[in-house]
Image 1 (cartoon, protein in one colour):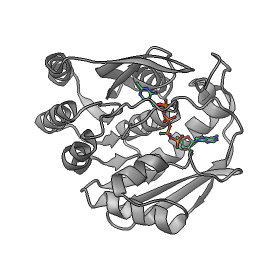
Image 2 (image 1 turned 120 degrees about the horizontal axis):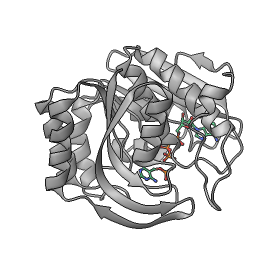
Image 3 (image 1 turned 30 degrees about the vertical axis):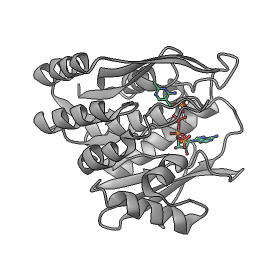
Image 4 (image 1 turned 120 degrees about the vertical axis):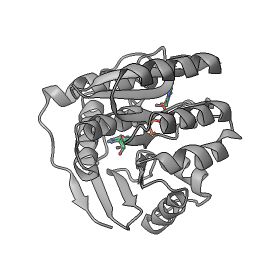
Length: 274
Ligand SMILES: Nc1ncnc2c1ncn2[C@@H]1O[C@H](COP(=O)(O)OP(=O)(O)OP(=O)(O)O)[C@@H](O)[C@H]1O
Ligand SMILES: Cc1ncc(COP(=O)(O)O)c(N)n1
């Protein structure tokens, strides 16, 4: 069984972060390991506390995984501060881990900061150059590029700017767009290759952890040897099912249903090159 790693924060509410990643890995038949960078006290109503894990312990977790497992693909989620980012980048290079998905988690849906403001530059300088794919949502793509995204043209410009960091590919997720009918995710790579996947927008507030789940699905598919196009398609279908069949758990923004992809037939996605 392929072994994968998530380096991210813990969500006590079980819908995002490490918990979403491990559930997704399990559903997609890969063996999930984890390095926890921060512990959040969180539920569907929001984040009430964030405790960073001591750096020494993060290093020990990275070594424990690196010394014993063959990591076929990995992802990063909430990294919280610049020191953690630099340490994580150091170990990714040390263990020569390939197929890195960087989900540049910055702000939780409820507004809580999951990455210190000054750590953004560190992310661009140290982690993005190692990334196979970086998966910002629209506000994150705007923050990383300094470009405001209002249409397809500015979305591409922002993606091109992010690629200047050295990441091999960028996938701008469309969950935050204002389109009432569709959500569209846009992939662009260093060679100008692009792919857009569009699905119908599901009218629901239960979208807690969609980005984490999506990037974990990409990681699992990369580990199994699939191409970016195949991995992107599976991840988009996985998240579409998870949102469509969400569970109505908690009083706020509920989690998605990580087992929906296994139980329900997939709908056709619209795909085009832009
Ligand atoms: N209402 C929705 N209906 C269908 N797909 C959605 C919806 N909301 C988000 N998605 C999809 O979910 C995935 C994650 O996108 P999104 O832009 O929400 O990421 P995110 O903001 O990083 O997520 P989060 O911060 O909640 O973890 C994308 O594939 C996006 O198209
Ligand atoms: C530990 C952790 N990692 C990531 C997110 C982002 O997910 P969302 O934007 O849906 O709150 C989160 N809330 N918590």
